[in-house]
Image 1 (tube, rainbow, N blue to C red):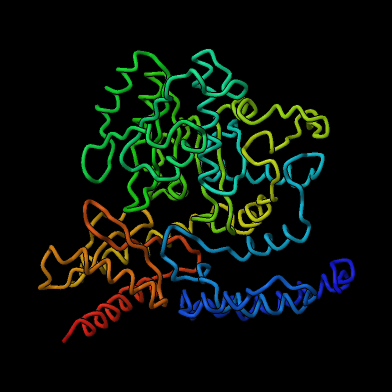
Image 2 (image 1 turned 30 degrees about the vertical axis):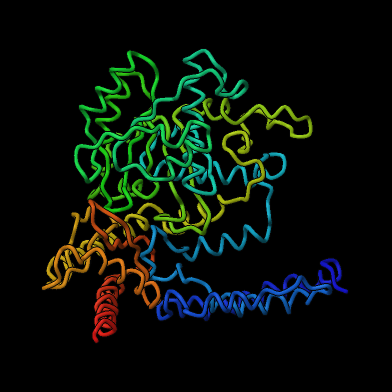
Length: 480
C-alpha cells in the first residue's frame, strides 16, 4: 500500500521529474505540431479501473509527463491561432509553479497576507498598464466570464438599489428585467454572465448599424430615452473576436452619463490596445467605465486560468460579494483586503503571482514591444492575404485578429462556404497550425488570433503554406 504520507520523501523528486521534462518540451515547442493526431488515444491510455494499490508518486508522475507532453494541444507554442489564447511567458510559468509549490489560500487575508498583498500590487500594476484610474477597485478571477459576472453583479446591485431593492439580500423577485444594451460586437461570455446572474441571457438588446455589428448610437440613445429615466446597463466592447473591431467607448460613456446608465466594458483582449500609442485611440473612454473586464490568459500571456475585473467604486464589490456572516471567516482589519468578498470565488488560487511576475519581469516597455510585434505580425498576415490570388481578406486588420477566407480563382461564390468549412476542419486535423472557423457577415471564415509571445512573422507565413497544402490534398481527394 502507498499513501501520500509514506511517499512524502518523494515530493521534491517528483517536481524534479517535471523539471527535467520541461526543458526539452519548451525548447521543442517551435517545431512541434500544435496537435498530435493520436492525442485522444494517448489520453485514453491513462484510463482503466481505479487502482486498488497506487503506483506511487514517482511512477505516476513519470507516466503523466510521458503522455501529457505528447498528447497535449501545444497552445503554448507560436502557431496556436485558434480562439484568442496566449502562452505563458517564462516568468509567468515559473511563478505558476511557485503558486503550486506554496499553495496559498488566497481568499482571506488571515490565511495568506502574502497572496492578498501581491494581488493588490498586481491589480495596481495592471491599472497603470491600461490607464485605468488608481481609485478603481479590482479582483483577479478565473476567466473573463467570471470577470463579467463580477462587473455585472455590481451593476445588478446598483440597478436594483435604484428600484429600492437590496438584490443581494432579497433577490430579483418582483423586479422588472434589467435593461442591458449593447452593439452587435458583444461576446457570448457577456450573455453567459447575465444567464448566471439570473438576468436572462436573451434579455440583452443589440443595436447594430450594419452586419459588422458596429453600434448604432442613435438607436441606442433612443432606447435609453424610452426608459424615461429608469436605470440601465450599457455594454461596450473593446476588441471583438471575429475581426478585432471595437465600440466607441467615449461616445458610449457620454450616453451613460446623459441617461444615468452603468457602463460595463468587455476588454478581454482589447484592453491591450491601450498599451501602444498605435492603438490607444481604440481604448479612449475606458477610464470612464463603471466596470471593466480583462483576461490574463490572452494577451497578458499568463497561465490558464486568469481574468480580472475593475470596478469604479470599490464599495460596489463589497455590496455585491461581501457580508459572509460566518464567524469562522474573520474580516481583514483596517486597510487589509479579503479578496473573497470582492468577487464570486470563495476558495481562490493565488493567480496573482504569475501576473506580478510577468509584469515585474518585462514591465510596460516589454509589453508594449510584444503588443506592437503582434500588431506587425497581424498586419503582415493581412497584407499576404490581401495580395494573394487565392485568399480574401474580409475585414481590416485593427488589432491582433485577421479574418479571411480561402477563395481560389474559379470557385463560385455559392461553393466558398462549404469549401472553407471543409478546409478549416482539415486544418485542425492536420495539426501543424491551428486557426479557428467562424461565421462573419454571412460567410464562413478563417480567423487567426495572434497573442502568443512566441509568435513571429514566419509562423503566420506557415499558416498560409499549410492551408494551401491542405486545400490541395482536399482537391486531390475530390478528383474521380
